[in-house]
Length: 150
Image (tube, rainbow, N blue to C red; front, side, top):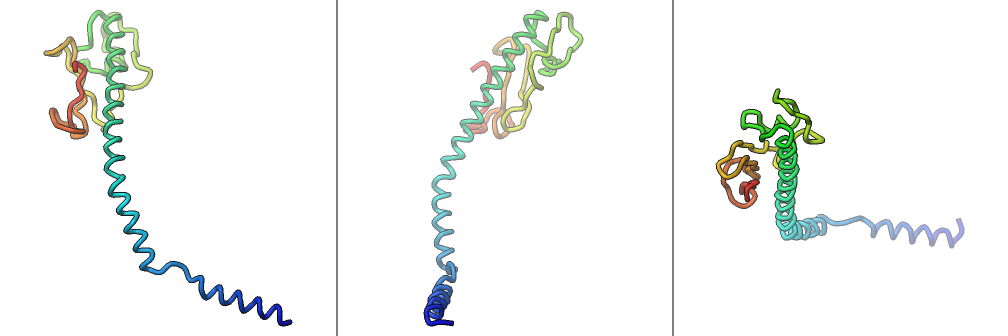
């Protein structure tokens, strides 16, 4: 080998020795910084997810209400509690039924619980509700009920 090639090889082997990667301490510092950022940003993101789910529930309920109105126009009444929302998909054996009244199956609420339908209701001709995140009547925050009469 000539002298120039030996000098280049020595420079490369010197660089290889210096390029060992990150130390464990450096990696731990990065992980701590990322955890701190996640603890600040995470709750704000999840707060918006809850708002979005409540908005989705209201939109779905409006679509179900429109389908119930279509049922009423054809049959002359809203489905009874015993017929339930299934009457929007399948003929419950009533005169005038001309459904299905929804393009797709009756959806579950954004928390994967069925919507609660009561007819006749105590506040209106029918009552449609989602019990929210907790799936129980009442509640606060994300567990608060969403009702058609409010």
